[in-house]
Figure 1 (spheres, helix red, strand yellow):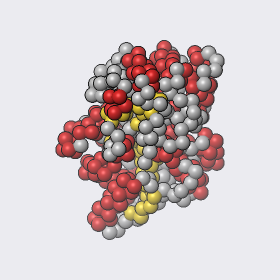
Figure 2 (tube, rainbow, N blue to C red):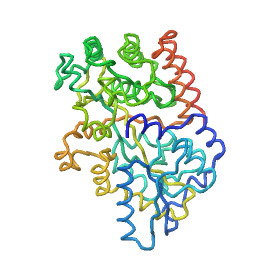
Figure 3 (tube, rainbow, N blue to C red):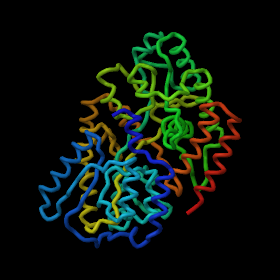
Figure 4 (cartoon, one colour):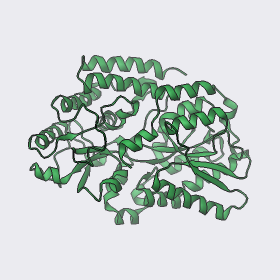
Length: 433
């Protein structure tokens, strides 16, 4: 599945999510869930409609059901709708959400929690310890304000720079060691690609206004530039600093010089040969691999950061346990089964997505030895930044996107004033409960 298609399917409008959140209200008792004392029996689960994930989900369900005749899983693809999150929010409001959804977007979790739709995994005796032992330090990014886990960090697609080796060769650039590590190198490479006629555009991120688009232009580079700083930290926006200004000026230069396009591309610009580079995750290997001779490098920083120290955006999807579930003890056991070392290995093998598990390359050395194209992403998975787990998360991102679109993409107004204004508004949003 192409990146834009995949992300659009996962996206939601700010208005849609905030509306369903407002309908649910607070429900502290429901959010606590049954914990370790919950009931046992049959459960329902939803998983993504991505073909590879369906294949993984079907085998996982078959394996569980074969061993648990009295606690069966009934599984289906997440129902169609404007977005997965709107479907989930509506199910929470109606009280008919399944026990587990293996397609829960981190950006939506704070609002689902506020609806009273999610069980605190920390309410299980081994809940917090299981999350933290599986995922390590990265788990902290997925805690709620109370320090509880209302989502299990499941799988990530750490984004990197994909580049077309044939286009780099045509432009006289070294396709095996491309000069892309610093902003200056990246900009000069972009100029060479376009001026030589090797590529119509150097890179073509979506210039559209959806809140999530900053996850594929600004946020990966900000994570890299700051060594892993999230957009909001301790209730305050972080990005109106020198690092954020530097990232914004880099992208503004790409747009101002016509190296990136202000026009929306109807399709996949990288696949169609209209752009020499793209910011994508490991899912792209199976999409582009047969048709494009590609390479992958970490996103650039102003001064150049060693690959083994470079951070990026996680592009994660997680698992939520929902309060409509009657048999929560079974659901918790299924959740652990689905994220066991064996099942994580099968997820990696069948989908190419990175389980959020400590020392991924060391846990699955045979896989990475047999699939060297994924090695860089496996290493990168250890250094990712998530969307902040804060109130009004979608509105926060939409505020940034609006400012970014105006000042960076279309070059209107003062860049620093735009960032400062967005940061001030986000401080207010992030401080609301």
